[in-house]
Length: 294
Image (cartoon, rainbow, N blue to C red; front, side):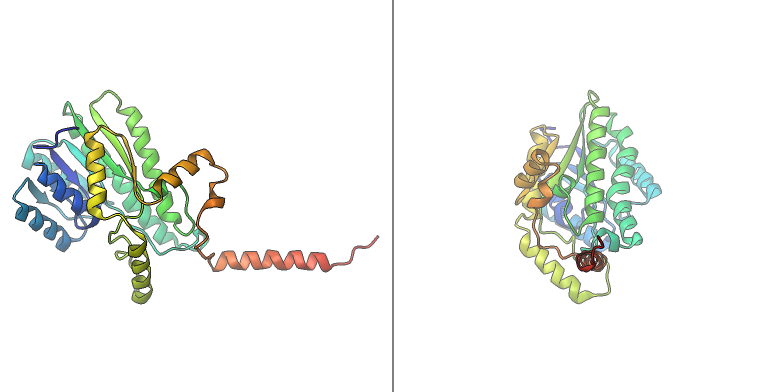
């Protein structure tokens, strides 16, 4: 989709980060927007920023993207307001505190999958009939570099982003020839509120994690939005960008069974894994000391 002017684009997670940056830049391209976020306050701030720019138009509708009926209502609102839909960007997502998979609570795992995976599935299924009415349309799903390579301590997030990747690549095959440009985006670390939105009672630990994430993230939301929009205009269906993404993308494909040995060793194993390793070490030690009868 080379020309975005006059196009009606739906964006989820538009209250901050990449979603807000996409909204502002698409509006500056003359697009008409329908914006979603779970946070009513930050979503209103995005709308105010667009209005200050004086380019493009926007409507907002706050809801949880894991809610299918809310998606269906959103589609009706957008259709009634604009009369058509040219594009959907499934950007909303969340994560949880770094933990090993054995230690991650089922509730945390389910919540990440509900938003990151089911939010993408619901949005795609609800809006695709409207997108397919156009000769040219756009469906963008935001995965991650962790939808290409595994990463210790991020089990729920990695699982969700691999699922988004597989879902998007399958959908691209199914929609070949329909005029729908199906794009999967794999950003590296982007300086967003991803970690600050983690729900926890330990505010001190959350602050430490957020500062670490923000220092490590070199790509700004504005730079990420520029990369996505430029890729869309060039007709790309796979957009990978950010610090170390080239390296992770290449080694995961070239060394699929060995790339884990080259990954950073910064993650500390959780309590359950430490206990298992200690027990294994003790068992080996006892086995060596046990006399053998001949």
